[in-house]
Length: 280
Length: 279
Ligand SMILES: Nc1ncnc2c1ncn2[C@@H]1O[C@H](COP(=O)(O)OP(=O)(O)OP(=O)(O)O)[C@@H](O)[C@H]1O
Ligand SMILES: [Mg+2]
Image (cartoon, rainbow over all chains, first blue to last red; front, side, top):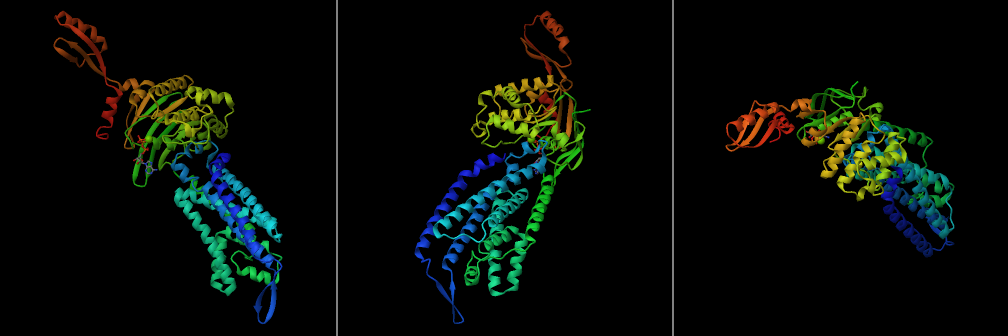
C-alpha cells in the first residue's frame, strides 16, 4: 500500500521539484551576480551610519524563500497523498476490501499517516538539502542552524499530512484538497500578520498570529525553522532580515513540541472516532 | 452455531429505511441466495455483516462474534458490489497484499490456486488497470477467497461476467459447498441462484417477503400436452399423472406431440413476492 501510493504521485512531484530547484539555482546565481558581495549597504538610523552584511542578508532571504518553497512543495505532496484517503477512496470502492480485513480501521489510518508522513519527510529533507547546497555553492553562506530547521519542516509537513487525512474522513476529495490548501494559506497569512504586528507593535495582530500558530502548528514550526537559520545573526542585519517576508520569523516557545504531539494525537483520536462511525 | 445470523436488523440512512427489521440465518456450509429488487437493501445487509455499515437496530453475528468485530472480520470473505483495486497492482501482487492483510500463510501456492479457480492464471502479472471489468471481478472473487474464509459474502459476483465466467463461478460455488464453506449470494440472476443455492431469501423494501428452500418454493403447476386440438393444460395433474393423461388421449384417438410437467419457477415466485415493486 505504501510503496504504491508513491508510484502514483511520483512523476508529478519530481517534475515540480526539478522545476523549482532549476529555477532556484538560476535565480540565486543571477541575483548574486547582480550584487557586489563586498559592498556594504547603509541604512539611515538617526544620523548614525550602520552597516548591514549584504551577503548574509541576501543569502538568508533567498534561503528563506526556498524554505517557503520546500514547505509549499511538501504540502502539495502531502495533499496528493492523503486528500482522498478515506472518503475519496471509499467512494471509488478502493477502501472497502481493505477495511473488511481484520487489520481494521485504526491500523489502516495509522499506516496511511505513517507512510505519507515518512514519504513527505524524506522529500522535504531532500529538497531542503538541495536548496541549502545550491545556496552555499553560489554564495558561500551557511545558515546558523542546519539540522533543526530541516526536522522542523519535516514535522510541519507531518502536521499537514495529519490535517489532510483528518479532512479526508469528513470531506469529499476535491473539497478536502481545496480546504487543505486554504488552511495552508491561512497559516502563512497569519504568520505574515504576526510579522507585521511585530513591526507595528500591534497587539491584536499578534494575538491573531498567536492563535493561528496554536491552531495550525505547522505555521509555528515553519516560523521557528526560518528563525533558526539566522538565530545567531545579530545587529542590523537581523533587523533588515526581519523586515522581509522570509526572514527573521518568530522563535517558538518551549511548548511547541509537546503541543505538536498533543495536536497530532488529538487529530488522530477524533479522526479515528469519526472514521469508526462512518458507513462505507 | 449459524455461520451468520441477523435478528431484527434495521438500517436507516437519514429518512430512507434501507432495512426494516430483517431476520436471516446462513447455516454452516449452507448456500443462501439473497434476492430482491434494486434498493431492497441486499447490499446494505451484507455491508452490515462485514462491518462496513453500522446497523440502526437489531443484531448481526458472524460465527458467533458481533458483526464488525475483528474476530468476525477475520472469518469472512467479501466481494463488494462496487469495488476497485489500485490500478498499479498486478493480479498476483494484489492477492499478496490481501494475504498480508488477512494473515494468510498460503504463499505463492494459494495465489496460484486462486487465480486458477477464477480463470486468471494467464493474467497473473497483468496490472489491474489493464484488466477488463470482468477480469477485475474475477480477481475480486479470488480476493474474497484469500485466507480460506469459512463464510463468504458475494454481492453480485457475476454482474460483469461473460457466460463462461458465470459458469465458472457456479462450479466454484459448488466446489465451496463441497468444502463446507457458507455463502450468502446477492444476485439478480434468478436462474443462477436457482441452480446453486440451497435456500433463497427475497427482500423487498427492507423486509423479508419470501424465504425457503429452493425446491420447496417450486410448486407444481400442472401438466401441459400438445395435441391435434392444440395445447391442453391439466392444472391439478402432477408428474406421476403424465403417462395416464397421454394414454387416455391416445386412447381417445388423438396424436400427442409433446408433454411438459410445469412447476412455478423462481422467477414467478420472485415476481409474486415483490409484486408491484418492480413495475
Ligand atoms: N450510503 C447511503 N446513503 C443513503 N442511502 C443509501 C446509502 N446506501 C444505500 N442507500 C439506500 O438504501 C436502500 C437500499 O440500498 P441497497 O444498496 O442495500 O440496495 P440493493 O438491494 O443492494 O439494491 P441493488 O439491487 O440496486 O444493488 C436504497 O433505497 C438506497 O437508496
Ligand atoms: Mg446492491
